[in-house]
Length: 383
Image (cartoon, rainbow, N blue to C red; front, side, top):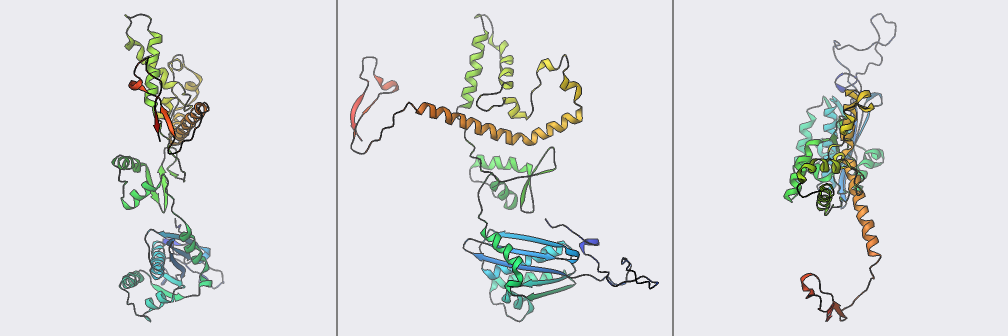
């Protein structure tokens, strides 16, 4: 993001060679009441590039006192090299306008664009004509505007930025659907996925070309690239139900005793006990905080007596920011646990390879067994 540097309204004032009224030769600061402000010109270097791999633009804006702003732009649409040169020029002029630059000197290594803007060349391409009209309209925002041609070797920095954006290959990750929705209001085709993205975007925003998440402990958290596979926890609900249903059988001693009376304690125990598959208790996975058991409330414990409300709130906000990472780690741990169990089970399986034409026997399963006296195998069948 461009940062302003210098005098008022982002435009430094040039005060070299000025002296006070007494003529002692010491420089003084120019005042706003001066008859005419001496504005320093800014230099803008632009370059656009396009090929089969993609298109991009490089923008370098240089101001007085060493101010330097660089931008790399990558376009999702394909254009010709001349169109990319115009795109780079317009992007640089927009940046200069945002910086409230008054006098702008632009350097471009495109002779076509330079001569078309100066009026020396005619513009016959309808698409380039629209670009030229856009540039002419933006010229009015500057007190002085000059576009000159420079050889490519003198425009190396902008050329490097343009080539860098062209080489970047877009990689789909978890941020891609969120960014597409925030920038272009595009949702995934599956209805359930579109609903999930709509709910998620309330926590995210774009700052420049970067995705940030609204946090609890910090105002904005930069979202970084990762490629989680999100392994599915197949059968997790059924597994939890088995554990919960098994517990009342162990607690109920007689038929007259109601299992409903034991259910709250069973659920509390399950929700607060770390699971072997995830390493975390379900309560922590949902709320992002450790549960406080009843024995910590009365009599009071060290945690309740020493921590202040501000410290507790700060710790809770930090835990909520780390909750997505905690859930992802638990998801992967569960996936690896299942993989380990599957490898152990498969060690007893003898691998056999068949080819077309082989004769095989089929073992009856389920209702096809035919009773205790039936044969264990059917067939043979030819593959």
